[in-house]
Length: 348
Image (cartoon, rainbow, N blue to C red; front, side, top):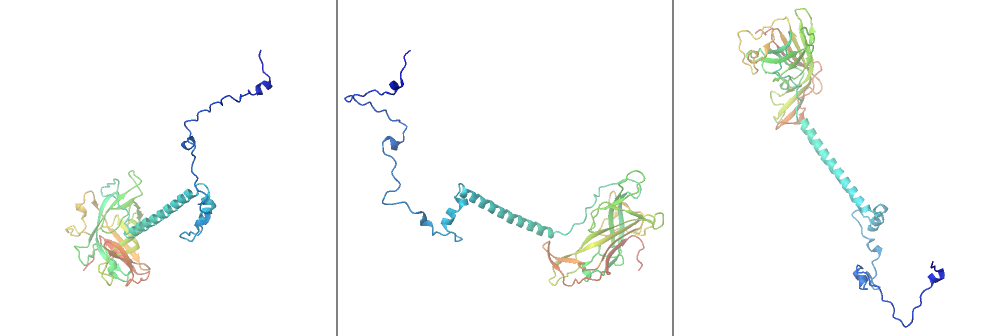
């Protein structure tokens, strides 16, 4: 077997001095043009025009008096991506500020629009509701007359009014007021003991749903179902209450509505021979409502004091400035009231 020693492997062959040198290998075709042709890139600066010094912009000031060099040398900005992060942060801050401004504007507009809307009465029951069960369950028309109006709780009597704005003594034919209410029972069965009452749409601004009825004086001639509830009574004054004769709206907040539905005491109104001429609808013409067969007494009451009433100007249907001139508070014992009933007709 043929083997070679290390000395033989490391020995270079001799080149004859008179022989031709070996040919150079071809250069790669994919080399850059500047190197392929031995040109190279020209220098950016020569010895006659050195690069500008880094301090040439050191005296440039920003809008807040900061120097350019301070911004350039800031370690947060000088890091990789610093300028990009700065722009993103600025954009986020601007977006948050815009959102706050828009939210505040919308909130104020909503608050202003809400304050222009008068307080709504509580929801009323549907007039199509027809509860069934033993008395007093049913849909009833309570035909009454406006008996008395008391305005002592306010220093301006024009601010308290009672629909239909005429008492029986002023006009027997124009004093009628009809309340269409619905009585039901959550108990069910043939002998319920608990009853609730709900109103329907009406011109009295009285609205309530499922108010519990209490039975008083059971078994006596004065036996009656009663309920009492607070309400806010809006009133359009019967005459101007401002020096410039502006339209106005007054609120008698914390007015009490108290009602008594008798179950044995007889009624004397309306007389059997009378014909309804009021602005409300008589019970006989309302499908599904039956006349309450006994006496009824309904009263709205409020005592005087601070903010009784609260009156505001009405401008194009919107609530304006509050009116205080001529509305000094009355004593807490002074009372305003509207009394409706269907018995004990006034005698002339």
